[in-house]
Length: 469
Image 1 (tube, helix red, strand yellow):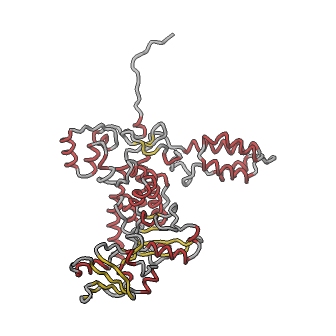
Image 2 (spheres, rainbow, N blue to C red):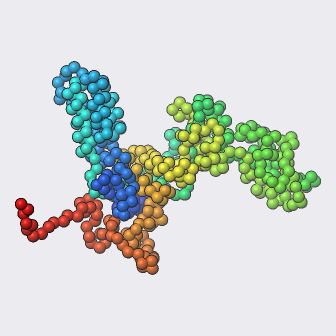
Image 3 (cartoon, rainbow, N blue to C red):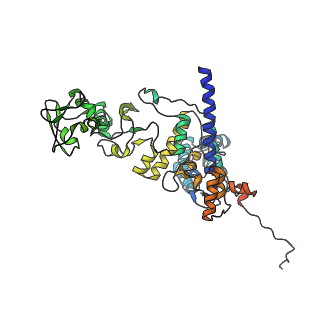
């Protein structure tokens, strides 16, 4: 079976990743760097104020770094003859002068690198000017088709991904969708991921000991009446009440207090009381109690809804709770949870709870996580561009006909992508016109596309102009 499974698997995967790449390219094709350094769509909407936050072209960079500062300092060391090392003050003075022209990371690297290298004044000057020169060289050029490059850079590794469900860092109990299916989920902006998962960090008081962390895990996991009852609820016909036998061990494990149970359950039309490990439910007015029975075991007692399982694990010297299921807003309300670091893999939930900026960051984190886990080195600027166009309107949009591609201003571009005829009819009814500003439409009508060298128009004067004396 092994061999054939592999072939079928590959065939299915090619379709999936091919379609994903087609949607990516269609959604990002119009993005380009303008002369003011911004990344804009063909209609002039700004997607990024500065490409990749630092304006560096990944193709010219050294694994994401604009300048390899440590190597550069080593080179200067060899070139410049050794003299008295420059003072710390001198280095800081020189760095202050160029601070505006470089990125904060480069300044930081220069600061620490030059402090260690003990170069002479001449060496320091040279290192700084070389860094500046190399940084300027690594910048992205106006007209660059950053969108298409990003789409290809994310789409291409997609074809190399494996279609397996991996286990989280040796924790067997947790199954996570990874690889291509997860990447497609992210690009699709699905309402909820197929395996929702939360990573819950705790505050100073609770992160140190397993006992304290377990206490919070008890408050987080959803506990229903069925979880803490021994048998199915039954009707006692003599007393005309419903009886639920409680399981004292489970009550202890979930941290539920029997006396408090009546106040925890929200059953308004019934009187509740607890007697010798039995919960007794008495209706306030005459009614059929058989209707109540099937609903009872799913009655919510405590915990955050939708969280099915919790796992208390130790990671990098602190106790962390991982969950199956996700409910960010409910978990953030629970005491002892560190709200600044707690996160979920459900991007929409993050958008609703913490806002679109947080959703954009989580899109980047999730996508990069999938790629890195598969051992693929994709420059983060490509992923950032994808996340930025998905969230540019203020909510998370899908890359596809229900999101970005379907909302393009050009009729031809929409029709060329998917659902052609309805698109054209709709446009005809509305009397839309096509500004021919993007890529697809210009290819269709046979004009040059407004990206790269096509971004500029050259004008030439004809005839001999009189020479002005």
